[in-house]
Image (cartoon, rainbow, N blue to C red; front, top):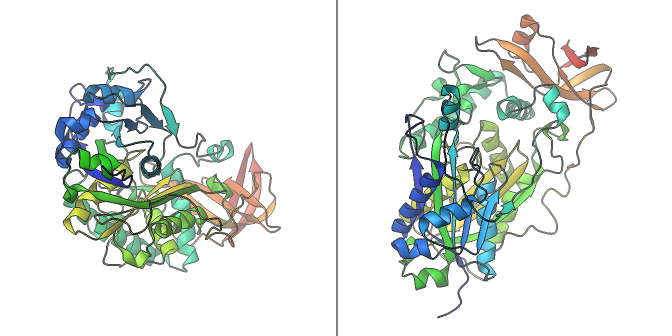
Length: 503
């Protein structure tokens, strides 16, 4: 038998559980194990595949406190892997982990792997509210290797001014992107809705989507009691959904192993290569330009170059889609028009397909495999994004074997961002005088009124500042009804907080 170390994905499984009492909800272990059984059946290899796993990867699952989740999963499946992994949290990590395992396969270090993860936030939150203890299975006698960068996504200074969670921060990038295009507020609102309405159409046809409901552009962007404003310019329907119970997994192995297990070639999806990197300006408030994402450009470009293809060769995309700006940034970097007929998701995206936290890209890879099998020869690009447009990953797939040598996930010596400004800005709260807004948002209260403005900008001498606005309702109403980027105002200090008051 030839030692063919080309990586192929051979079977996928996905799981969704809606509206279940927390006492009856399926625990993470069984969700992931069921995905494995389904994936083994999808591959046509059954229990023989489950017992043959030599590498098991279980991505970060919130509140699952097993010492070694991958070992626990493997034991449930009847296998004894020699290598186990967990991960740091991040929306990019599924693609990053898959690329890592694929490269291990090319080096002969892994032959048969199971890559999986779950999100149980709906059950976790509901159980907490009802005072229910979730006795999830734990275990493990060794420590798995951890994939990812162990660094918080926000700084202490950002937290002080309310830049804490994704709904606080992504709108700031969105507003900066809009202003960079010279787009007015109303046409921008429509363009966001038009973009994501197509995502809801895909979700409506996806049996594993959390919200399989098609919605119009106007429905997505119009504030109503059921679709309240979260942070300008995003309504609830434009935000990633967090509280879901979903899982996904797939088998990635060498061609040699696939042949030895008798897996039909029509189940094979070839890994053509990938890439990963992270922004040099790690914290959002320190980005030199809120309308650019240099490391995303580097990552997506490198993945395509490693695969030996151009963006025109890609037939299907799944861009990480926690918020509209994440997709818009990807389109900008790859020079793709928003009305490109290929579409930008195979799952329906995070606000509608679900699968948030560290698990989404497992769903996108699994679904991409299904879609590419339906159209043999087509190539697919899957991307991931962690924290706040901070960590990036990408991979290319096809039912056809990549020409040439074994695929890779290396970054080029000269990055596409080499001529861009990438170093972090020094962010201060001791700035004085006149400031100009570079990025901003207003956080809304439960009654649908803007309650707090968050501003990042520059002083007249070019220094970066972070501030809140006064809580005046008329001022905030004005901030969300006219373009704020480029607007000037005065900086002052009230108590221990820096305040920006628009002129």
